[in-house]
Image 1: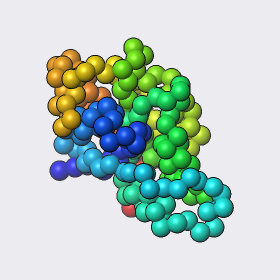
Image 2: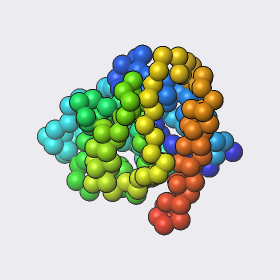
Image 3: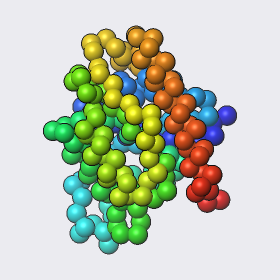
Image 4: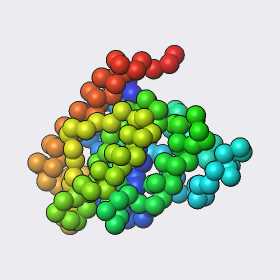
Length: 190
């Protein structure tokens, strides 16, 4: 029986994203105590504080989806040594208006894949800075920068390299334990 609901964000808007493949693998490898569900942000308009007084319905649904999960996982590429603009826009929507930050005390994790040798290390560091400002307890270890090679993960989330599959399974187990630890310090509201 699932113990924690985890919402995951795929940072790339591309349908064929290698990070979407990684997300499928993580869902498949997650321990039974994690119920995984994607939180999409493709329909959000560009954020402006002009919306703060009256959020559009799409943004209200987006914030409600985050409120409905216990933790969040970011599965994202690195664009220009940062995170994709669409993901940053989604975080801006979720963290506003002032005093209604959806990430406050919500455990979070970051993982990503890229064809480059350093994976998504620099983009993840930038995302850590953003989530820290958003008051989201962040799993800082295990760090996970996956170098993607052709065929490493199939379209349906099967990992073809045993060492990578073992690493990803362990990452998800550690994420489950991290969520437990956060809720010891910050118990969930009943």
